Amino acid sequence: MRVLVTGGAGFIGSHLCDALAARGDQVFVLDDLSTGRFQNIEHLPGVECIIDTCLNQEIVRDLVREVDVVYHLAATVGVQLVVNHPIQTIVNNIRGTEVVLEETCRYRRRLLITSTSEVYGKGSREVFGEEDDRVIGPTHRHRWCYAASKAIDEFLALAYWFEKRHPVVIVRLFNTVGPRQMGRYGMVIPNLVEQALRNEPLTVFGDGKQTRCFTNVTDVVPALVKLMDRKDINGEVYNIGSTQSVSIEDLAKRIAEKTGSTSELVFVPYDQAYGPGYEDMRHRAPCLEKIHQAIGYAPSSSLDQILDLIIAEKRTQLNPA
Image (cartoon, rainbow, N blue to C red; front, side):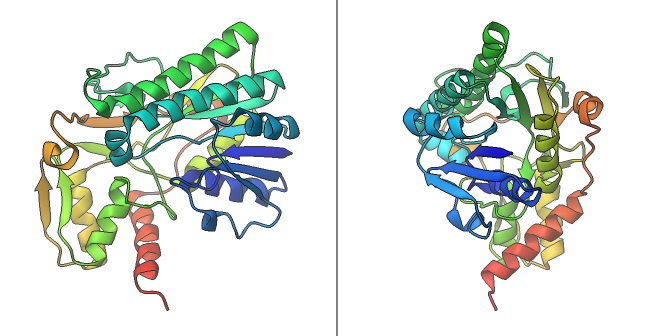
């Protein structure tokens, strides 16, 4: 097939391009390289990369017209970017998705939209299902604009399915990690690994008791492809993630042990890291029953395997031969 991947030069997007190219698809990438890197896809023969944004509707229209399906991954991501650039976050995430929906609907191209576990907000559950209620913080706290913008993306996509029968499926990604992910925008595992390898203090925000589930990008990408290949699940939302929870404090300790680091943990208050009033959720883990029933999804990588991969990559980057 001819496939468009918005955000295809980013961390997850580039791994998706790898998988699509490997099965013989012709891949087009639209990426403004704000957080993605051309180096992530330059090894792929035949991939055509257009350096622009989804806000450019003419470019999006030209690309959508030429392809069979579209994976929409382009978005403003990362805690630091969201907190420091709320306008960029809101406009890119909402208007960018609106443009992609308009043009894929115009040409009846099947569309997969990547959303986020952040849409569950600060709900008190430890495990979140697709039908659960959402609890979002107040509008004067910029931290919540990412969750709200991605929720609007979902509402809009589902409205297109309801009113126009536009073939679209939505996935909510939970803390996806792996090679090519950078820590500079607040991604916790790359940050901690780089700090550990440099024997710098390991910065843990809050009290470190908050828990997360980390999923290998190599588990996530095949799920995206399988969902896109299913033609009978339009208008559905699926969690993708892992059910292996770990506290951020224990995660930092495990990374220090695996790297042989002399680093000590330093606990940084949220207000100091992200400004006054920052809120975080204590626990966030996905219910995977729905996606397991749809495509047989079950993550295969353990947290230790994921950490070993990232440590090996970061060690090579810090100490090139």
